[in-house]
Image (cartoon, rainbow, N blue to C red; front, side):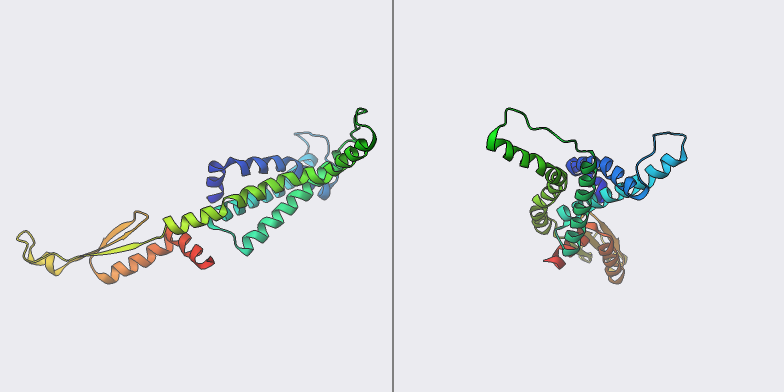
Length: 228
């Protein structure tokens, strides 16, 4: 699964998703079912509030991680960009809702006086809009920071080539008998490491076609070529 590979190779996107999961779960549970009941492991009411909200929040996180992985590995398309934007907006709103309910009124220090106090107060008030945006902004920046390089790397270094080797023995070779000459072998090779030998050309062509449909490197390059 690409999302799991992406988590293992780039844990940043996974860490930000987990950070958002807690607040998103609270926001979704509260919006759907009101304020959370007291935590009681034996109460069905608590599970009824918690489990659906957690599943929805987890689905949003997995979708964001998966889309981020696709953009970094395979390049940006309109569909991927739109999907990732929706996830970013959802993450922002859920984080903002949690903060809007829980944010205390922070007092500006008495040492900040005059015009500085007014400016400091305005900066404090902006926090309710800025802080929830830091998580989706960092995720978006991270996702698009490496997508162009990865796209070029795939196109240049993973161009799939399929080599067809027709092995027809020379009859002058004293170690080759007539049966081998009449029944040459046809060997197909792919850059991914796949290779197979066939006894006729038709079987070889069908085998190559079947391999192309399953070869991840070939399919990835074909998609990149289609996008470009």
